[in-house]
Image (cartoon, rainbow, N blue to C red; front, top):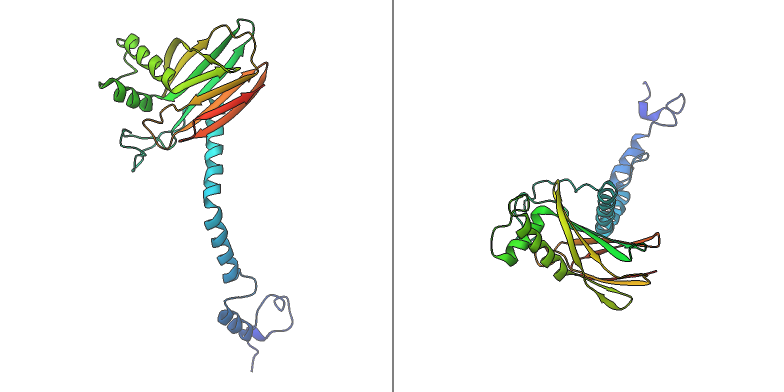
Length: 236
């Protein structure tokens, strides 16, 4: 009688073809030679369950980094469940602001710029003003600039070397899906420490992330505040 293929002991397939007895034992034990075991897949599932929040946070950090480096707003896409009732459709997956603070030693001023998603900014401004706000309307630029100035000064507060720093509004401009607002702090000849309270959009979005970059004497430091964290300090 011809030998069964599973009983071959010679030839090029001898080292790779399992016996029927081995296959039966493997199926009974959940392990077949050359294939991952059930225990292996169980460990994979356990690892993913334990580390999925960290993996997601890391991926979010990568997306934020790309957004900040490119200077362009994060891609918008429909979101089936808004983070907060104030949010209007279409929503975007990341709710972030970016604030740049730079010391101009020559002019002895702090230069401050804030970038906020336009639809998010309109939402919180409407909440305070109790009226419709359209930041793309050139006819209402003076009125909307006043709203932006008042809002940012309430929600972005600075101390320089322990002294309260008053923000002076310079202007604003709309760019794609974002709105930039510009401020300066006068009479700052030198900086050793900057303390910031930044709760921009915390009154409208409970998934808000506020990024800050501070540059003094060519040294740049950055931090990220996740709602409800609002306080940061920079030492130079």
